[in-house]
Structure formats: structure tokens, C-alpha cells
Image 1 (spheres, rainbow, N blue to C red):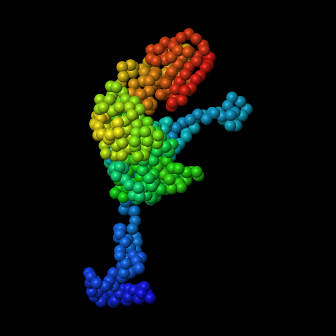
Image 2 (image 1 turned 180 degrees about the vertical axis):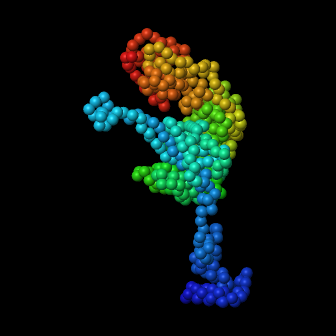
Image 3 (image 1 turned 180 degrees about the horizontal axis):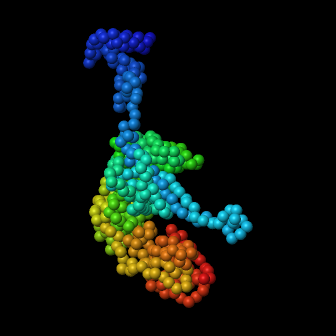
Length: 493
């Protein structure tokens, strides 16, 4: 009965206000006034009770309050999101090649164009476009189309397979529309975001959602293990598109989805904008490869067993497994067995987080690490240096009658290991170049392959491999390491 009476009073109040009557202010003390009763009902209260703590929430009072829209935000940012078309000529072998009868009907083998479609984001008015590496990988030609219909042939300034990032350059007499790169570290789970791209080639599309999780690892997209997860719909063709925050800033490059059907099921992943910023700056500076700071230490995960032995409450951080005696880590006092818990104030939950934090820092600066050593937590400053070249990094071209002929090799140094995307503490002789049409190319050798053994002899220097490759023999037995896998081959050549 009391609720019915309050509702009747509320209706009367609305009628009175509509007729132009002047309403008295509600008293600040004593019994609740009509406006308090009305507000309580609209907020879902039962009347007379204490207010529930929390942010103000109410139903909208009119149509104007119900017409909230992302349209202004999309209008400010969508022009900077572009379509990326990559094409490559591949030779298709006809099953009837060599047969004079069938060739007259089905033709001979010939080159065909293989194309891929993705998205990109203009981040500089001079024409700097960021996209995914897998969109432009191995492409002979890459074109960029803007939302206003203009189309440009682009140049690839820098790409990195491990990060799945690429930077393109297009040119025009007029400045291009851009979107500012925001701070991905400021994101929180639950923040609203927009995903803009070209899914399935249907044209520019905008979807909305929230940040579902941060620092996602082991999703099988690239070696980088620090992704933003969002439920904003991302589909094939969205790769390289923009993830935008409510301030109109780029906070991620959409990269991959988890799906069993090929379509979005609400689990998408984006590369954080802080990594995009560091990669873009390297490309604009003319870098040949994305150079990460070197501290001269190797890391491994902290397992529950290790955490218990070190007296930690739970497994977190990155365990130092080895330290280069001449590196910055050693000079700073870091030792094997220490655990890095934080990097410049940001918590390090796992080893991949430390790799990410290091990669986003400029070479030549310094970082403050929070380190657990001998049961005590200490703050240690470490220099972020350029990886050393080493003393024997000269490239040697292999010749002679061997499967290695046409390959360029060099002894691994930390800097060369970075360029070849292998662990900086890896030792050995690596293939750094392969001449097209050479025996080395024909036998399937790849950049970054590490030659361990040839005809029963260990390869430890480039000069040693050159000597073995020039031997007068037709039988070859060799061992090669590729992506951490050991491959052994025996052949007659």
C-alpha cells in the first residue's frame, strides 16, 4: 500500500510540474520529500532505507539521455584506419606440364598472384602506417587504400615476425589523417574500446566492446607474449586495424582471434600501443631491425616449486638463470637465482612481461628493477645498452661444390643473434644470407640456421665451416639447429 501511495504521489508530482506549478525544495532533514521518494523509486529502492554505496545510477529521464553514441569518436579516428592489400607472384605447377596433348587444353605452368587483405593505422601525417607483419609478409607489392578512396603503393620500412608488426610508408603532397598513440599501460579491465578495420573485405567496420584481460600470454600468435584481450568483434581482415580507447587514442593493433569457426566469438587480441610506439620510432629512425636493449642476462619462469624454495607467497617474476660476466646486469650486481619482481615500478608477473617491458625501452637509458635476492627485496638500477657486436662478426661467403655454396655465414654475437631473432646467448655459426638460385637456397637452408657439425667435425668458427665446405667430397653429413630443433641430414651431392 505504501508503494502504491508513493507511486500515486509521483504521478501527481509530474502532472503538477507539467502544468507549470512551482515545486518547493525538499527539506534536508526530517521525512523524505516527494522528490526523494521519486528518485528512490527510479533507483530501484524500497523507500525509507539507507542509500547503497556506489556510483550514481538511474534510468534516463528523456530521449536525449538515451541517445548516447560513439559516432563523434568514430568520426575523429576512422579516417586514419586504412586497408592494406598485399600481393605476391607464385609459380603454380600444372599437373599436365610436359604433356604436349594436355598442355594445349590446360596450358603451361605460370606465375599467379596470391593476395592478402588486412588493415592498418596511420600514426604520422607524413604517411607512416602500422600493420601486422603477417599481412605483408613475403609480399612483392603492398598497396594502401584510404577511406576517402585514395590508393597508394607503399614501401615497407621495418617488419618483425616475432612481434608481428610492420611499418609502411606512403607519400602524398598533403598530410594524412592520423590517430594519436595512447598509453596502453593505463588500460584497465572493463574499459570501453572500439575496434576499427576491414573484416572479410566488406569495407570499414566499427565494433565496440571492453578490455576483457591484459598481459595475455601463450596464445600462439607470435613470440611476443603480452596481448590485450577484448570482446570487440574482430574478424579476418581486421588484422592490423585499430583498437581505440574512449579518448580517441590508439591503444592496440588488432592481431588475432581465438575461434573454432573463423569468425569472432568474443576473444580477440591486440598488440599494446606502447610496443607499437617503440617499433614505429625504430622504423622512423631507419633501423634495419627492431633492436631491443641488452642487459646481459637470461631468464626463466618462476615455477611453484621455485617460488616455495625462495619463500615467495606465489609464483611471479622472472628468475635470472645466467649472467654475462661483462654485461650491464653483472656490473649492477645481479646474480643467477635472483628474481626480478618489478620493472620501473610495473609488476612483473611472468617472464614474458619482463621481455615486453625491456623491448619498449630505448637503448641507452636505464631501468630500475625490484629484485628478490637472498630473501630480501632490493632496488637495482641497470643500464640498457646496445647488444655487443662481438669480435668475429664478419660475414663469409661459402663457395665450392657443397650444399652450403651461396650461403653467407658469421659467428653469432649478441647483436647478430638479435637480428636473426635467436636468443642473445646462443653460440655458433649462423647463416646470415643466401644467394637466390644457389645450392644453399635449393637445399632449403634458411636465415638464422645454425650449423653445428659437418662430416663429423664440430663447427665453431666461420673459418672452420668455410674450410669444411670447400672439401673435395660427394658425401655430406651435417647438423643444423633451427628454431631450437636439431636437424640431421645425409646426402650425396
